[in-house]
Length: 133
Image (cartoon, rainbow, N blue to C red; front, side, top):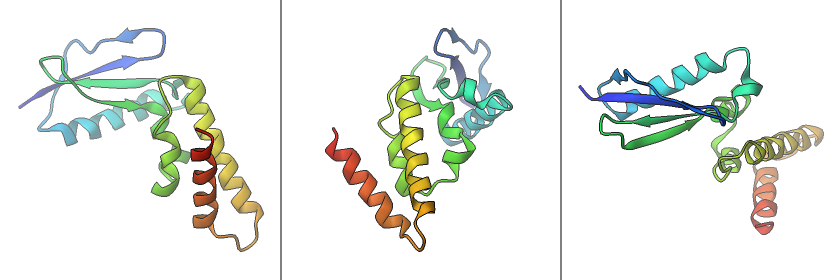
């Protein structure tokens, strides 16, 4: 069974996983990473939003990275069409916070409209964001 290593990057230092965890496959490793991130972020979500887990195989090859901010309860409940705002948030906390603020603004503007169409509001926001690049 493959061994995966879950190295924590808190933005200031990397805390290596020296033991690793044996898991059947990458999907199991991703599920385990989500569980670890949620446990570490519990009761201090704001502090951990910029943290990430770099998941590597036994040879040290990066399998994937999991950004703790993507586990944010608010973000995880968003429809996929709006999650695109987080896709290009780079490694900085500022970028992630900017993406989160855009999502909140979009959702609040939709709530302010009576009978508004969320799909059209999201497409409008996406077009505006793409034109700003």
